[in-house]
Amino acid sequence: MKYPRLSLAAASLIVVLGAGACSRQTPTGATADAPEQATQAPVPAPPTEAKVGDAMTLSVPTLDGKTFDLAAQRGHWVVVNMWATWCGPCIEEMPELSALDAMNEDVKVIGLDMEDIARADLDAFLEKHPVVYPIAAMDPMRPPAGFGSVQFLPKTWLIDPNGKLARVFAGPVHANMLREEIDKSAKADAVPKA
Image 1 (cartoon, one colour):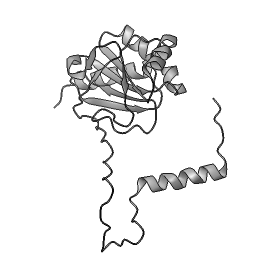
Image 2: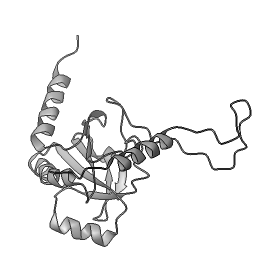
Image 3: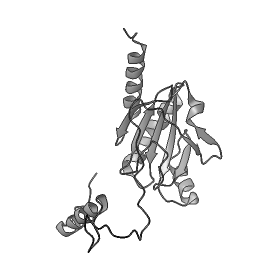
Image 4: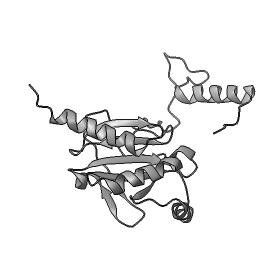
């Protein structure tokens, strides 16, 4: 896949804008000893992302009118996949995730569409790219608790049968990769602890 090149000016602008967005800047005329009066609403802290071993929660309405509740999936491995219709690698992994869900009774997959898109457009996309697992349309600015901010897609969380985070995958995944991770984790859990 080829990606367009950025001009030096565009790349510099991205760096400058990105640097400003990441740090709190002191307003003109304010000093560290004399902070400026607060005239703007405080910027909310970015959502926190769970760590491996943390208990996860997720309860979201799905496009089929049901609710996907992680607590109801105990006893199953759960794959939570964040994606968007404009993301090429996301689209490429959808058949893999669908096959994983369809061919493994111990695995449940849910897709979280992380974009601002009209419902009709999302439905049309899913008609062209059908999957067997449920999809939930999410506000990219408000990801579910514990799933962190949306900085890149796709991103996939593997949650164990007890509801704890087993692994996070940044970038595309495939069915064999997830199945191997599940089998490896299940073997590790089966080894008696001394």
